[in-house]
Image (cartoon, rainbow, N blue to C red; front, side, top):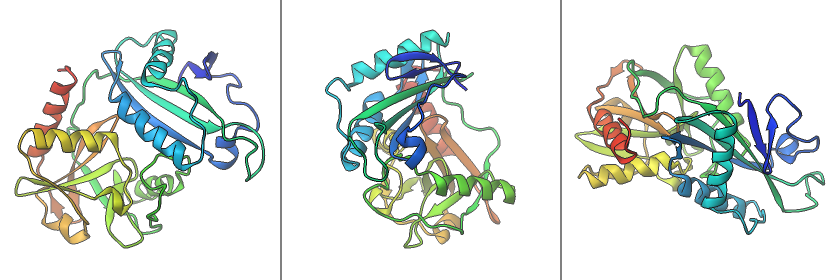
Length: 282
């Protein structure tokens, strides 16, 4: 847990009552969040994180303050990193909640923000040494709707998938949409590789509009690796050469096993090297 937190510009002890009673994110899940990696003391891909957050705020009818910008949040994050004595790599969680007041009907559409910072040992993206074991999450399907691409505070499907995966002895469970397409894992976007070509579910199929997903697509295209957005079924997993997962903190995590199928990680290795080159870390 972050030793100090940034609550609307105030740097507070993380062990104190930093969130007020009546907070709508706490009471109703009435908020959004972004999880951001810091490398070399720089918030990675901050502009894209904020663009997604601002789009989500618009969908939720939240009023965007005039001073909310990349420069504003970069200053707020840097102040918190300094206060926590974090000098290179970190995991940032930026939360936006609708202001306190009302019940299901809010009294205001104005917002407040909350930032947490935790140190990360590695100042680069590191591919997991041991591949992940994955399975399908059968209990709940994710609905395709206007909220699907955004990181809202309604995370119960992901929490339940993590709990179920732990019970099954799996590293990750893959989540399906309400049309039975496989769209993501409990904490990451999904890519499969067949004959050197990348395939990933489209945003229109209900997956999170991940910032790392977008980076990997762009890096692949820059290095002449073809990418297609399409529906992915269990059969596609069984015929793939590689499967890997992406998120803002780990970068890329490769999968070694799905049921009886085993996978390699050559394309995942190449892409994580491209990713570290892009952010000038080694």
